[in-house]
Amino acid sequence: METWDAIRSRRNVRAYADRPIPASDLDRILEAGWRAPSSMNEQRWDFVVCTERAQLQQLAKVWEHAKHVAVSAATVALVAPLSSNPHIKESIEYDLGQATMSMMVAAADLGIGSGHAAVADQELARSLLGFPADRYCAYLIAFGYPADRPLRPIARPKRRPIEGVVHRGRW
Image (cartoon, rainbow, N blue to C red; front, side, top):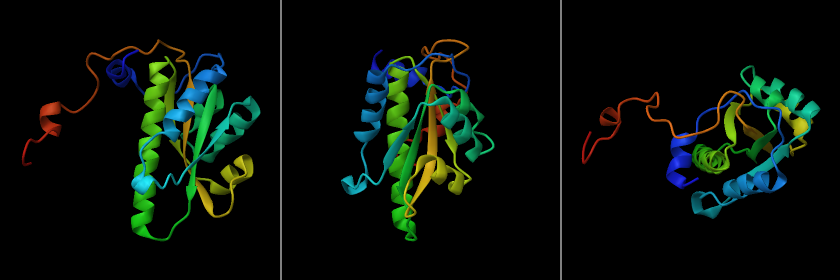
């Protein structure tokens, strides 16, 4: 798939076919996150990849809206350092967003759907993933082949009209 088609095809997928993701495809998705830009090239992230069904089912309990994690073929936890500095926290969040989108577009390029989730229960996430006390699990990205229909460019996405979003020169 071409990059533009991958961008136009990407959608939140939360129902997955019972089909594993080949290791080479999962590695490509992870490399896309690894290659994502980050502020001053700090790369303040770690990725924990989960593919075992029992672990995915437990991981789905870290947030009430993360049920799709339990049925995913793989889920990547984005782990970052804790900071009390608001500027560093904002920078980390921005960088995590870039890594997230890079992984999601790379997945779409391979016909693999994705759906993100927040993490409310940090202690459960820490016990399941084993990350150090000076880190937190920021987000989960579930991956799998869509159960309903394959990814393809969406002709009319449910978005605000572009004319109301794009301002040229001034608001």
